[in-house]
Image (cartoon, rainbow, N blue to C red):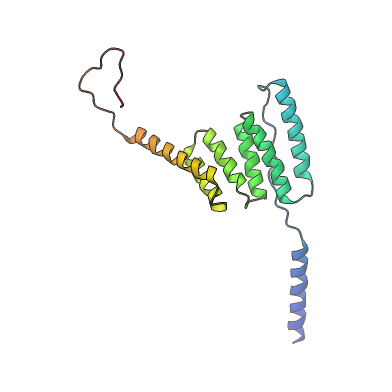
Length: 175
């Protein structure tokens, strides 16, 4: 009986110690891409904002605040067409705040801009799973499904048959 009580007390102490430890989700450090092709003013803004993001995510702040820092940097990378860096920022934000629908939505936008409708559609669906009434996600998901359908028809449809040579300077009528 004494051993059972002692074992229970030890288990409770260990459980209490584990409960007090703050689990701090970590995200990968997003390096500044090669920004040499950007205008000097844009380069300065990217360097300044990247340094601010690095400081913000290094602070012992709530995960949502660190996710927002990654998200802000990701939006600037999208605006300056550094899509790979933007994707890494949004992925880090999503890792820190997986319940925030902004991160799969922004990841979907990056996939859309990279002309990957299948990936974008899956990410829009993930955003909608978090917030089913998000109208922009619904609209973009429909757009991506339509793009996928057009692409499949283009790839798998046999070429149109013509009844003979086309008149010079005219293509087939698609109307």
